[in-house]
Image 1 (tube, rainbow, N blue to C red):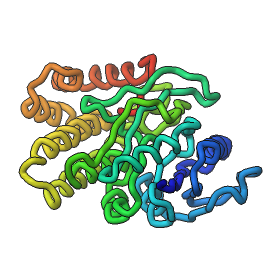
Image 2 (cartoon, helix red, strand yellow):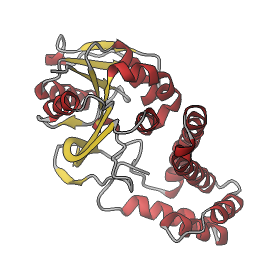
Image 3 (cartoon, one colour):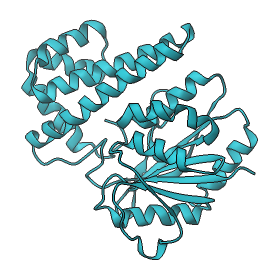
Length: 308
């Protein structure tokens, strides 16, 4: 039977109570070892002595997860963000997957969306490809992950997508995906991917920084595909290229820098009728109207998801 390391990455030193809930869920789920990767050490009260502290100088999720993989000692590493919690069956399911699927290097599963008190708000929706692309849903075979940790470190804030991309390039039948909700993704208004904002100005300032990070991450992943992929991965490259152009457009829009020009380039490259193409069309006519529309969409979406 495979052993499982829980690697919990702490992103905000002020979230001690949330981190304690994450550690509790990993212990109660049956992880063989629990690692907490963070820059600043604080006591976790009753849990002191039940986890291993891993100091890191990294500030990005990708860097912290890479450090966690290198420090872990079990067969499988299951990731958990400090503001999420696992269901009790999580580790049992992880063991079952990797025990019965020897070729698998990555396991991805569904999640529930909950508030900071643990009350369910809805069910997480997978992306168009059926994957969830959420760090706390991902487990990897450690022997395989060690070789890809430098790439995930360089992807920084797109670490979840980077693990999936590395597995895609590894070969056929290496990824197992199920819609079982084994994680509670916590919506608390300060999530990296969907924070709460009260004003348009605050929204634009915060989102610009995040979009620029994702532009850089998508560029890293396109370079990775070029260096490690084959002709059959052209479609995968095109998907990341489109994501790069989406984030480039959104960054220009929220920063109010050449928004019309970037939107026009996006529309010429992707003449579609999806939501993003419609937003680009609006930005060509009126960047300020497009910013307000993007703000309203992010502010009033009733069931918050894990993606931008």
